Amino acid sequence: MKIIVTGAKGQLGTDLLAELSESYPQDVVLGIDRAEVDLCDRNAVLRFVNNEKPDAIMHLAAYTAVDKAESDADACTAINVGGTKNVTDAAEEVGAKILYISTDYVFDGTKNGIYDPNDKKNPLSVYGKTKSEGEDIVAAYPKHFIVRTSWVFGKNGRNFPYTMLNLARAGKSLKVINDQVGSPTYTPHLSKLIAEIIHSSVYGIYHCTNEGFVSWYDFTKEIMRLAGINDVIIKAIHTDEYSVAAKRPLNSRLSKNSLYAAGFHRMPTWQEAIYEFMKETGNLPKGVEK
Image 1 (tube, one colour):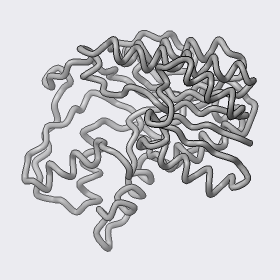
Image 2 (cartoon, helix red, strand yellow):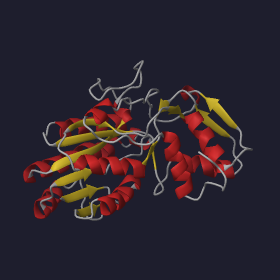
Image 3 (cartoon, one colour):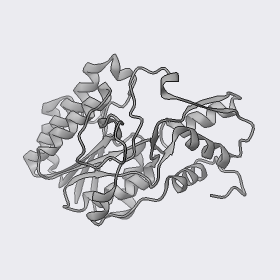
Image 4 (cartoon, one colour):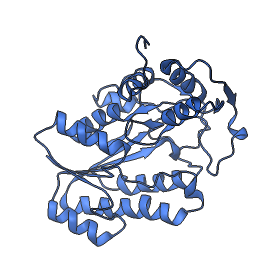
């Protein structure tokens, strides 16, 4: 299979290309980023895809600066909506499957329970709204996979675990939100799953996260335990005590029932995910156990 991967140099894209190379060596994979093709340039996108004629496009590229998007809505919309429209139209022209990476931020987080894929969307932020609009564009094309994930972290990028470790090692006390709950998701695990999905034809919307739910506060405590950092002060705070530009959903618990019903594999627990991350990044002292 010939696959184009947008956003190939990002946190997820880097691990996805490695996963495809290892598990599907027979595939021809073209990883592109803005330097190769500007996804907001419709003619460039259509020309590139028509020249390459891929069997599938995995659309990872996105504007992901959630707070900055509140004051930079035009740029966020151009990339997350306009860019997605260009990629989807190009896929349709050559008959390629498309897999679109989306987010828990398409929901408002007020549900008393776990979100199913077809629950009503009601994004709270500019970023969430643009990703939701991107979903709608992709969903109008029959050969689509919409993959919602949450709290993504991996070796190749800036993310929550790195931030907490850096602050703790700088001697900073930590104030961490305790009323937002979701599933931390490790990019190598997510890469393995979406690589499996793109090689199928079971189209639809899937929630793809590591197993289990946790608050940011308890996630932080586990990061510190694994790192052997015992002298940092970690204070639990509520969302309304932490000032940011964009509103976040309090409840980001996503149901994976449709994923399992389609026969795709389960990802490991979030505890296993953070353990592997700490080990991979050299942040796990000898003798520390899961």
